[in-house]
Length: 132
Image (cartoon, rainbow, N blue to C red; front, top):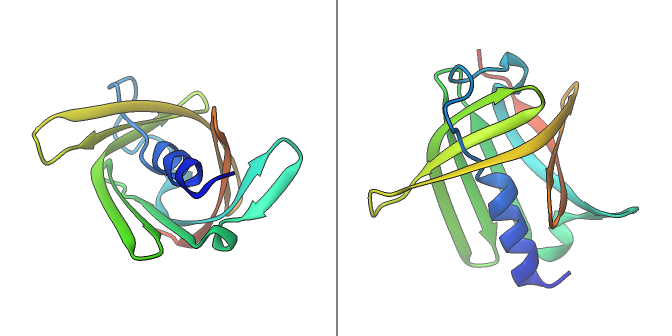
């Protein structure tokens, strides 16, 4: 996977979206700060550090989220709102232009491991901090 494709997948996975289908901050089990640990494509799991990529996503109980993605000297921070229902994570990312970007991704949560599924692959996260 190229660095560009990896960054694009990380942005898709790390910056999700809320179409307003569920209550803000819906699934309490998602509350907290999550660090991306690996990308899974097919049966191959690759640590994101191998690509120089670092992704942290924080889901606040208030229904707000923030995501920070770093790759080398490049860094991007996004903020918005989130909700979760029926195994789907929904986000609205607020752009500086005033526009919003809505996205929804399937997710699976087991303990302190979060899997986010996108067309480009699955991003695996580990919880680094719980928020109540």
